[in-house]
Structures are given as structure tokens and as C-alpha cells.
Length: 118
Length: 111
Image (cartoon, rainbow over all chains, first blue to last red; front, side):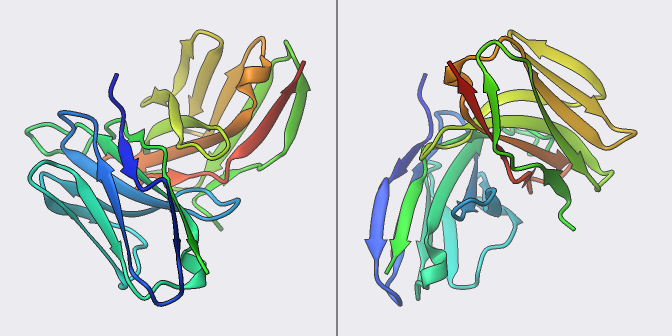
């Protein structure tokens, strides 16, 4: 079965640079979530999108932005990178359905992008 | 205090043992409870998903939810070396995508 695809899998950047992470959800999934997992930490919810509109916002820094495109893929844009941004960034997708009602639908995670900021 | 508390371990057991993993939470609005397994350098993989209090069984795995005590558990029977991973509990409210994770318990099953 198709899974969530993330690219790149690994990324090395220097401080103050920008980075763009991409996420391709499972086919027919309409909702995308972004999480940040620091070393030895649990995943922290950043932001989610449903049908190309921002749905919920978590602990996403102002330096980060994200969007979901017409083909449902999503991109997380990170600017003015800091050392503390080094982490695993996971994308997850789910199928919420036409009602758009959030009802604890199952989220399926991608393999993650490992970002290292030097 | 974090909304979801989980003992990070590490937990080491012999092959064939019964493993018990637990999480407590403080937010009574949590309605959905999940257990994820995460292998090193991989994304979390959904193991179990429960909505109501009680037990849910799937093969060697049993998830237990006690909403009155704000306590959830995952039991692994006949544990195998391939079960060695970090197990994360996660939970969310009825109308909120903000899934809160526990710290994860690192489990090692020794042959």
C-alpha cells in the first residue's frame, strides 16, 4: 500500500539559511500534519491542513510557514534556520472526508526528513 | 507538567515476556488514544487506536483505556526481538487535530 512520502530524507543547512521540506500524502487523504521531533523528544505538532486550508496551528515558529497544494502535497518552508531547528520533521496524512469534521481520524506518518543545521 | 506522561524507560525484557507500557494524562477532553511504534530513524507507525474505555485486542497487542483514572496501557504478549522499538502513546480531543504524544518508552526484547 502507498505510504506518506517525504523529501528530502536528509538535509544539511547552515544557520540563517532556508529549507523546504515536501510531503506527499497517501492517495485520497485530504489532511496533512507536520510534526517536529527533537533528539530524544516526542513529536510536537506544528500545523495541519485540510483541503488546502490551514486547519490547526500548534507550536510552529513564525520563521516557518507551510501550505497545501491542489494535488494535496504540502511544503514546510523554514527560514532563518537556527541550530535548535535540527530535528526530525514528520509529515502525517489522514482522510477526514467531505464533512471536514475532525473526529480523531487516524494519522499515518511518513519516514521523516532529518534536518541538521550547522 | 506535561499533558501526557510516559515513562521513557529504557525497558529491557527477555523474549517471550509480557510487556506493559503505560501513559497517564491530565486533559479529560482527550477522546482518542493511540499507540505508535517507532523504530530508530523511522516515522511512527500506528499500532492501536481506541476511542472508548475498555480493552481492544489485535494479535499480540492489547490496548486498555481507563478514562476515569486517565490511564492507558499497551500490553505485548509473547514479546519478540522485532518488537524492540520506542513506543509512543498519543491522544487527541474530539474536535482538535493537535495530537499530544508521550515521551516514548524505549523497549528492548532480548533473544
